[in-house]
Image (cartoon, rainbow over all chains, first blue to last red; front, side, top):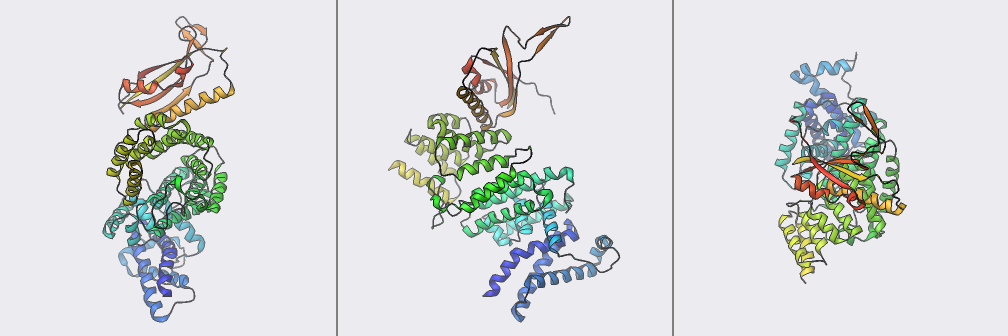
Length: 410
Length: 115
């Protein structure tokens, strides 16, 4: 039984490291070769360890085998040799032996550089997340398929196209130049936030997997914080935001795995340690002159970690949503602003504002209207909730709304 | 969708005094109004609030003091929005807090250059 747990564990922690180092060495156009090589290494490990026993230092074993595979490959493959090898050999100076550097420092650098390569605005967001999960987080294709509620074939196709795009764009695996770093970090943060949200809001029922996605997004964000040149205020703000959200992980689902709405959560289940971590990062984010959308979202998330239900809280939240929307419009922020408005100025005024949003086609819009009309015009509330049910895809969300309708009709 | 500018005008009221709470309330009204426009995806540019220092230059190099276009009424600021039509823009302008303090809003369409 030990092997069964060991390999997936190592796959998750080591695949990404070795792949990043090899890919950096080979160039992005050979990302598949790097990936295959590391997959092969793991297969060989499984067979060898099964036969002869697990070595004392399994990770070191993997590194050595991957290194040898890479060297063999560079020697054998003439085509590859002609195209790539001169450059590699050149970079390793006099020594004719190809050096494959699997030191902690190089692994860290390669992974960060890989992050910048993958979080490229030229690649569709869904593909970026897929690639990030595969290359930066070492997820198997099957896990990614479950996370996206689709099949392996679709994911394989998506990743293939994304890799083709990386080649086409000739993306370099390197740190962006100093002048560009802020801009490029923004792209990376967008992807990391999407990755986090994929876990936080995903419709998959696999709770472990969902948590994993969020933790991975936090781990990658932490890598940016650990590195001096990428340790910027917006990065800390995003980290703070993630900590605040993640603090409610245990509270937002019941033992049956069903979603529990914010208002109905048992606040004793909120993770106080993550909340105070979030506060630390929020303080660290409070330097410089830039007020990013992550700063504002982190501040909103902070208020949501307070159990205080007074008007002051909602006034602050409303103010922050006003600011956020001015920086960047999004339907979800528009809806949340209206909710906050209802808490401060009452439901009637919020209904008036909601009607202006024109978000027909969005089930959350009708859910909000349903909530706002509740106790004011229950008939209208039901109508809106029924409209929401028609538009909802996730079964769990549908059940929540159907329960609300039931309560209102009963 | 077309773009419109909302031009805020008010009488110069140096004597108007508001309590801190009232001013806080005015601030909040403006914030919420901006937020409301942004929540509809219709905010192009918050624009600016203009100060009270100003001079007008007229033919013959006649320079007059004061920022007033008409007698005592001055342009206080502007915001650029996106709206389906002038009527839609007018609907938005109806929410302008300046209307509660004796001011008015002029809505004008913006001629866009082909890009």
